[in-house]
Length: 112
Length: 113
Image 1 (spheres, rainbow over the protein chains, first blue to last red):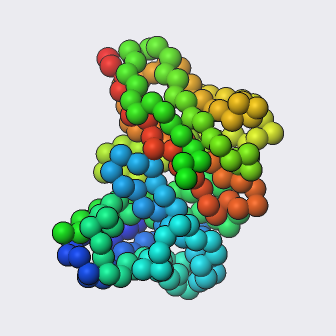
Image 2 (tube, each protein chain N blue to C red; image 1 turned 180 degrees about the vertical axis):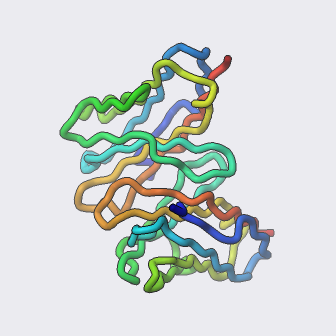
């Protein structure tokens, strides 16, 4: 039973560029949440997708957008990258209304 | 807004002794609390949780205590093992808004053999 997978593992971009991160949820899960974890901080909630719609959003600008596909996989897109977007981006999956989320290993994004 | 706080960035204990990790929260709407463990290069792994209707939940060597009046919870690990060395995150959410889980900054636990 595959857990949550994310790609790529590492990514280096320059300011102003755009990036797309990908996530496949744990088998049987239908809800995907995205988090940003800056160095020395805990994960911060970006948004959550369920039934291909954004259901809840944290305090992140519109430069951060996402998508969920019919197979429940998800993408996180960040436009006009800033140096401050450098972080570990974590994807978590769960069943709807379940509190326990299962995390992927993350994508380390570095913006130069 | 730091609604979940873990004030100790690090903790070091001897193998076999008790590890106590603390967490404070400010939002009284939180009614479900979780602890996650994170090893380097891996995502956080769910460890144990507690609902606000309880004040204690136990799972093997791990026990979580909740003091709602003080808005404080703690994770006890007894006995501590070197394999427990990791970063521990406290997280909280509320019933009507479980989509938005708030995390503390984490506590790095080191268990010395």
